[in-house]
Image (cartoon, rainbow, N blue to C red; front, side, top):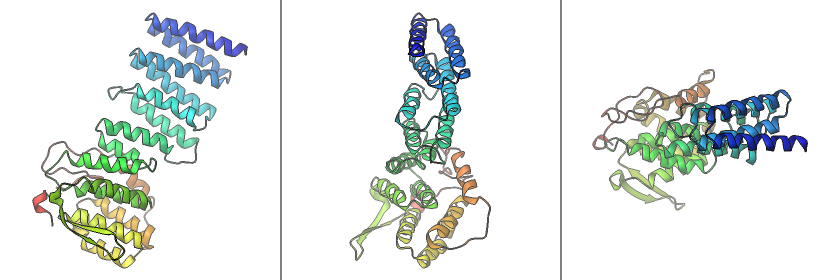
Length: 329
């Protein structure tokens, strides 16, 4: 009880200091008191103090000081092995909401938060809700490459958001085949054995395609609508999904052979197809240590496509020229 009263009194004093415009003094005092709490293993009060101070300083546009306390907060999360739950996650959300894209330390804060969540939850890629939030944040800012990386390992709702992200990304280069953007998302989901989300991405993306992309439409015996596109990349994506749904290895091999030249436009497409063949059809490839892990790492750190170039497209690694719409099959 005495500790709680003491913390409340300290917070009140520090809030007044910030309110009076004594930002540097307040920042140093927040850190000093937090250090004292941490040395005494009083992590709860340290977390409350750092969160309160960071929010207050960020609201007063003290970006550097506020973000510094936010980074310290995540350090204390790790020291105390704070579990990922609604309360601990919401603190991250509240702080990140006050950091804009111009904040040079925001990326470090978000990365550290993901690392904390990975170490203190069952999810090796970090908490899905946290990944979803960060993905939406980057999507809103039109940083499509970063948005994709986080939405791929987010929640079930992330799949629709990723479909929209990829479509908006494709709109940056309207003269290029939109299928390249859709294919990269679907391949990556399937390489993680996530057929459900791959289908959601496909549906979300295709619903927004211009009429110029559609060649024909027909019904299968079981009532499923199959569309034929004027883009070989879109047709490849659809047939790949159908093959994975049926588990027909012969069809998968035919697709891989027929579209080998198309897949060759990005060396990572072929590597992802190899992984999909193993996961869905038990088609064993020569042993390559950590192939998928290396591929996904390359993807997540990859640069976004050039904004305006007749040869640019969204590659997973280094790109090759992208055919224009009139050159499609």
